[in-house]
Image (spheres, one colour):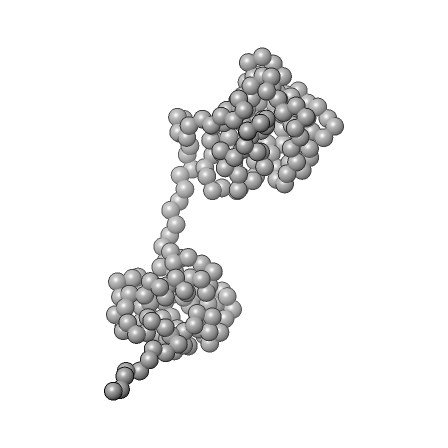
Length: 218
């Protein structure tokens, strides 16, 4: 009994026939551009994707459409996403944060409201610092920059060996590698706008205050 030819190095997609993945948008232009950006020859790219050069050439010229499993493999080969291979434009983040949007978060008496969009290179918050719940001896040191603006109340800011008293309308901008701590200097606490450049910090994980059980300010 004879059997049909075994699938070649191009993998299961070749065996599915020319109509495999026919409903997907053409990826030919994106494949050519990604290979050009990577500085790879057709043979080198095909070897990385575990395809034959002839099969990759057919994909790049639009004579064959890849299946979804093959798309995933090609995305890994070029260090990108299936969305980019399909030429999809990512959604534009809404630049507006409305009043009454994301709710307040509280940690150790400090209250935080999101004041900027997520997934950005910096994070913006509105913060209420309660009186009598200062950082005490807890000093923060971490990479990045911080900027704050006092909206209401009086704020005490320690930067290294210096101490500053900030009134409404005052602001501070400093390197976060400078040892720093913050506290309210008057009854009623202080309200401030706070911006920092630590992209990986989440609102739930940010705490300027400190204290037992409070999330750590990076």
